[in-house]
Image (cartoon, rainbow, N blue to C red; front, top):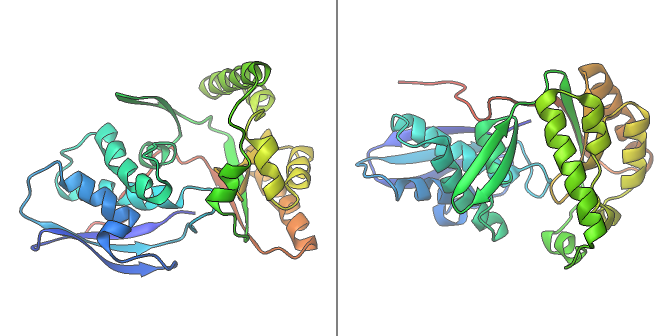
Length: 282
């Protein structure tokens, strides 16, 4: 799953959103994530041209799988390509973060960095920005189920606690370190042992219908681990191999079929490249 965008260079300076297909999103440049990210880029370069953007939105806003990041990353990547690639990947991340700020109130790189770089990314620092890319193990697949329910960001944030116990933080950092090591070394057993969220999941999972049952079914079917994607309501499962990932998608789907909740299901390898040019017209 992914958004597609058409970006063209035009004589009139500035950025104009001309088409949005798939979702009801604002056309006003300063109220659109892609538009804001594009303007952030153009504020940092002298140019006599402008750009028109068409957005074909395949990732639904509020899904927990980086909808706003897809728009922001696509816009800055395409404009950078049309200008001859004057900006580095790190600079593009900074521009795309301004789009995320419009969407969530925070200029974070959690989603735009993997959208631009591909693979897994680790945001080590914001001042200065330092993002490390981690290539995914070759057999690693992800299954994502997106129940079609509305989960407001305010509700998702409200259930989080302001303080975390030292004991939980120690466990969380141990799991985090194990996950990073497992990804670097393609140690699937270590990845599986490390896929446990001690801090966020216990609080947010109550907002997602049948979360515990979906996760349990995924693990029983062979998933390495499962959890909440972003702030929800999507649930992800990491799997070794396409066959297991497909079977996991099947058992996850069955649970929502039984309680008559509509959903989208996605099974894919981890995209190692990130955003890319699909077609180029000169």
